[in-house]
Image (cartoon, rainbow, N blue to C red; front, side, top):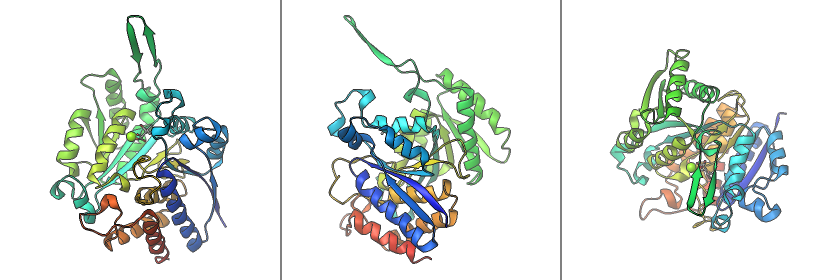
Length: 366
Ligand code: IPM
Ligand code: MG
């Protein structure tokens, strides 16, 4: 029997609640297919700060390195917001991405037809949206040097640096083309080439890599224009590839197209590349949602769809991933809704009930 080692890092807030449901879904896949899963829990983020004083304890990093895949919840919260930048809960996640060199972040935003009315945008705009945002995750402003703040009697000066090398751009561009090739073969590279020299290089490298993918149509869009086009006519996009900060912003915007942040999964992959048994970290795009944490009302679908991505990209189990995704669609079609995706007056169910229904829908397909 094949056994997969999965590191489970629930983190803070609703991360604690939704990750449990994603684990249960994987367990039900295991039970029905005979696949073995070994789940090992680790501390990260605020929970780790409280327990051992640091957001990414060495034991957690070790656990993550030894695992085939990491199931991640969310980190951060008001309790830790007063800490200096380098000690905040979010640092745990950033350090993990960097340490494991998880440079390609895949964030699909699909508008399920039965949820089109959950989006604050008109159904006529969001209907049919199916976008994959690929965000570079280990470079740019997030990690560039120099960084820091100088305080003088005359005032302060703070610096972050947006920096990319050819190698960093090329490897994420290749993931972009590989992914686009398996979708509708259209890649949009997003930059700010009219202002930033980093973007000049970005555009140059992406254009060069495109020569290896003659079957994929490439276009370049400026980030401000892309932000507008995403809410104006989202259906014009297929696959988007962009640098770290632009991707952070655009992927939150894309979440609105899918109805709710509670629906969006993500995969962060390393060099083995998308779809080829890559080590990966899988996390819902939503955060810790302190306002609803601990109440059992969070939508576990983003976490469960992240588990589906884990099956697809790290374990090479596409059929099982499809089953999990179908199970989610079926439960939604049956009309079950958590608060974030319910229309006014619709019956609302909790995290665990939604998890139960999806587990049952997964099991009924085997
Ligand atoms: C995300 C989050 C993180 C980021 C935070 C929590 C550090 O916003 O995954 O998009 O900025 O990358
Ligand atoms: Mg973000």
